[in-house]
Amino acid sequence: MAADMRLVDDVIHRRLSSDVALINQISHYIVSAGGKRIRPRLVLLFSQALGFTGSAQHELAATVEFIHTATLLHDDVVDESSLRRGRETANAWFGNA
Image 1 (cartoon, one colour):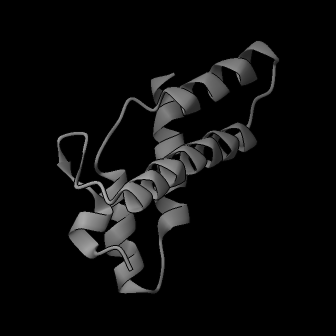
Image 2: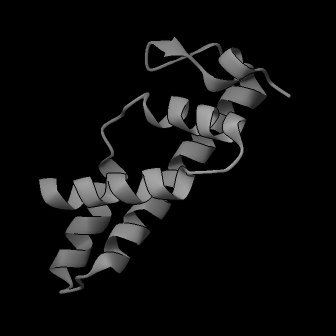
């Protein structure tokens, strides 16, 4: 599982890479906040249980994590939250525009 999660993290970082410096800063800030990454782990477990292997499972797990993270960011923007996971939210750090 640890090796698969490293591959998921690789996908996340690769997909968040941008030529736009601000996007790189914001995405790195959000991803570096950490978290348990339960949803990608569940995707990997279900994939393995169903005999599905290969890089597509890592892409799917990363996609699920992106959706989850996007909902958290959306909540923070709408609620104008200033803290998440014990540190400033992305919108508090970079603005709510």
